[in-house]
Image 1 (tube, helix red, strand yellow):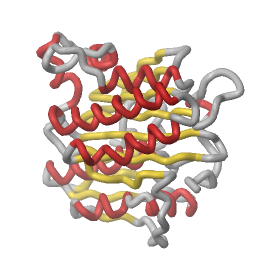
Image 2 (image 1 turned 90 degrees about the vertical axis):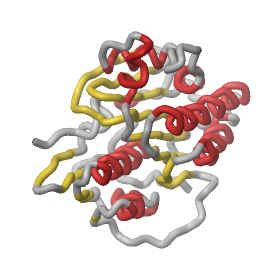
Image 3 (image 1 turned 120 degrees about the vertical axis):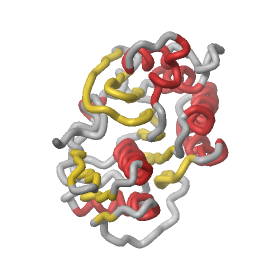
Image 4 (image 1 turned 45 degrees about the vertical axis):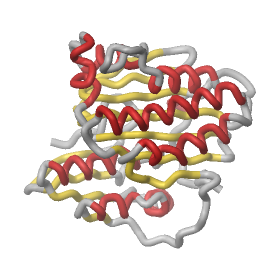
Length: 281
């Protein structure tokens, strides 16, 4: 049976299914490729490898989106665990000031480029919140290494014409429910609520997710998290929970403005669609 990669609207246009011993992720219908798509696919490939399954990625039908996914080295991540893909070859160019290609998160230092990019871009809006965002993202990376029982993945991009930074972290690990069951978590949704309130596995106040959430929303951006059968999308104005297919592990996405918004806050519903023209540059 086909299903999206995770709960909520963020990955609704993706399809995942297992057939003949191979897990397939189908991105042909995606309207836009974001870091959250990239790290989700990389996590799915890692999980399939761990389960002894083959893995196949069907890339976006739109050539621009497909080239972008390849430029962000998604194909390399898939091939590294023995999977196959149909992404095109692209010429590599140095855009390190604007993006973080999909990379493995195995040690706390592996999240450094992502945290630094987040700080550099958010500092143009608010230096104090940028510092908090840097600390929060770094701790999320630390938490993956300490608690997920799995490798993680990171990716980020800036979109100058939209004036925003998008970043994502994913791991196909044990998930928040297993991590926080000892602190009273009774369901995936409850575990997400506890994590966003700063509850940690040790019982001490966790700062990674909570600090990142606060920095993102105070900057006027939005925050998405999925684990197990639940997801939550949070902005300064709303907190929406949703249910859907199981995401094995934990998936975090943040979007923050890189210039002061004229009015209101960013809205996930208005940020999708169109061709992949706003690549980092």
